[in-house]
Amino acid sequence: MMTVDYKAIAKDYADKYMEDLFTYLRYETVSAQGREIPETADFVRDTIIEAGGESEILGDLGGHPVVYGYFKAGANGNSDKTLLFYNHYDVQPEDPIDEWKTNPFEPTVVDGKIVARGVSDNKANFMSRIVAVKAIQDTEGGLPCNVKFFVEGEEEIGSPNIDKYLENYADKFSADACIWESGSKDSEERMVISAGVKGIAYFEASVVSADIDIHSSQAAVIDNGAWRLVHALATLRDVDNNITVDGFKEMRTEPTDAEKASVAAFPYNEAATIDTYGLKHPLITDGLDYSAQEALILHPTMTISGLLSGYTGQGTKTVLPRKAMAKIDVRLVPGYEPETVYEVLRKHFDSKGFEDVKLELLTGVKPFRTDISDPFTEDVIASAKKVYGEENVILELNSAGTGPMHGFGKYLNVPILGAGTGWVESGAHAPNENIRIADYYQGVEHIIQLLHTFSGE
Image (cartoon, rainbow, N blue to C red):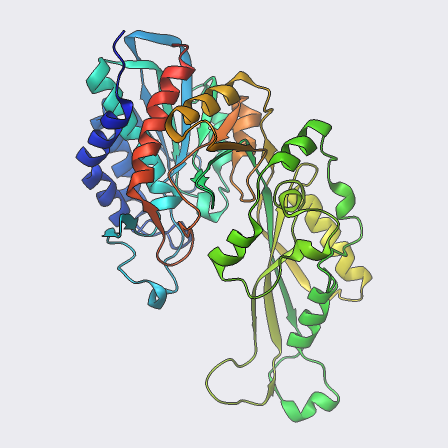
């Protein structure tokens, strides 16, 4: 039996359609600002159609539209099996512009890397799936199974409308399993396959302490918004980084022994983390009673993501600021729900005497984990090992990041695993976001291998 060189095929087709990826990256699809959303959705639909699939734009349920795609199994394929790909076409804002070394929306090849906003999160991953589908159809005359796509435009703003589309169009997106949008190599060049995501509850906390800003000489007798908010925030976590909100830790669902064993076996390179991000302080887990691996996968977070108050311009302005605002990012593991976290935080501030701190839940996403005993897990891992090597593929129960995976489990009832084309220095959401071209080739090859493995060949 002749051996097919999927590595060569993947590289050939990735190069052949590289300009399609570059065109996709030029769309400034910043969902938070509503930039070029319709144009990008049209591009995704047209790309699926040009690859030989069926596609339509679904926008009847509000928000930025969802793009549906469908490719039928070939004559010799397994039409009883359907693999769904979830991706998103929106990206984060490009700020801060002055830290980019190239135009963020003009993809540029630098030292074997493609640099552009959205290339790792998530446009290259979508295109790697499309290229794999094209390659199989051209070289084998048809796909080994049915393939579907769910491509949304609101992931970077918390996917507020996605569950409505999943519930209403559950039959259209029905499948046997799902490949998630994300995945990357770690600091040791191992491909990390994720079986879940953390959720998120993202808040805005604010204080108004007076009708006007006041001369700072009055600080002898008058409080101000900045101090009020800083004191309130300081009650959320102590100097040893323990979360000190009553009732918060108790919400966590205790991990099973199998989950604990999986996490204990998960490799983590502390030195590489410190080096990659140029950290100036030790990891906060150094003072906690659980490991970095456990923190990233099994525990929630309580993070201040932004602070704004008073005068921050050049020179001095002696003032008591009347307003202060903070953004609070809480990552969730099983047992936590955004609305419940809001209730606990509201009760906490009130009990500490900060009833005047206004708290608003801006976005919420529930956590999700796939049962890793599902056979689909072995399909993804086995196909990945053919590409990356037997010792270079690891499985994590869930990533430390967040995505709208919960709705796919609830409404489609499918196992979900993530695989992609990123690497440890891709810099998603940061200036100079990038992927390595060599990783992109492997990402295409992995999807080719996976489609064959999943179909039962």
